[in-house]
Image (cartoon, rainbow over all chains, first blue to last red):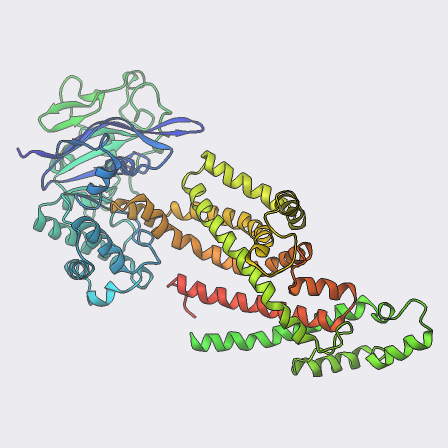
Length: 327
Length: 304
């Protein structure tokens, strides 16, 4: 087994608001190996994005990482200086955001924005940075990259802008790429292109990816390992085959069941009743208790631990307390 | 862009006509200047004679026609007080006002940009409270009061600056501070709120995720975006600035357009009033045009 590139241990990111402390990420642990692609899935409000922002050190006020460790190549990112963190950001750890339409600065040219990080991290001259930027634009499949280099973001389509974001994120050959729902805002056809593009580029450079998504189709296509998050916690953590074939957490099962399948013609799509509880509102028992079809009285009183039910398969559920159960 | 400029400049003409009509009406209803021009014991005959020689006994439309004929030749008639053509007198006073306005604007920018940015990046910190509280306090102080207080402290008590007049740089200091700090107060708040909005944008997060130093994230990526509404609103407030110069010039006996206008209003010197208001309106229109051009330079998304 190769060494872990990123190891997150018991990460806790809380938001200190006027209405009290909101535990957005509450004791999350996982690791990413070199060249591995993992997906973090879950509904809105499950803490996926806050987890990724915590790794980038970009959780804005009033949020704060209050506990745990984020080890990147052995260095704890929660304790290193701002200066050292800036050296990693955009260089060794890069991020692609959900909204390509608003994630580029409207007042600067595409070229200016890509070459900015190349100049910063690789100490490249203006000309070198320009050559490298155009090369990156070509690599992400942008036609006429020289022209796009001097275009402003508003002149490009959403798919093009996301390609620019990818070019920007990959311009310094990061070891870890965090992609926060990179295809959510795009057309389905463009989605496939962008995913294919990410896959190719990653294989070329042996980059690890942390893909945040709620699209299980993307998960099946792209990733090696899946982390399912619910209400700020990891509820299931295993390889992608097991997740699809034999999910062990009722929430994972619910997510899978609510994905439409082409060979099963049904009039109504199944869904998980209710919504993710606001962080901190469930203080006793399992956090999924209110929506779980299999909840027992134990689930309302005692909080389950994330337990390894077999090698490389962790589940946070009382069902499997005395051995694996098929659900 | 060239076509746009020509179109905009052509639009200035009807606007100026409307303004001149409004000014004419205001002066017409404001009353008869003859009473102020002659001694109190003047006979009814003298009054009538003067009225006739000035064309004031003509009906409204004839007076307006005479006025417009002059206007298209940029002739506003002769000043009753100076006995010479009004426009040259007004234009002669213009540099003093422009000097004061420019100095005030520079002071405002020097104060407002750092404080606006600073209070936005350190929201709810002591600096922020100082900047927002200070700007409310400053905005609440009328220009004339602030001017008099500055004169009392720095001219009368400390003797650092002259009480009034124009000439050296030290004459400029107090009136420019009086006028400039008032604008700075408003501008600080404007920059603060604009920056607060921009700092929450997705592209600021992107810039941070690239590992750019916070200083550059704020001053390069955020500030240029925040500047767009600030420039627009500031240019639209040129008229407020003109209002400010009227008061400030009077307090400091600054020999500018404002002082001239106030005196002309008091003596019902119609020609001067009309010429001054016309020139001021022209400047305001020009500033708005300048704002639109700046807007285009600052924001590549704007197409004309």
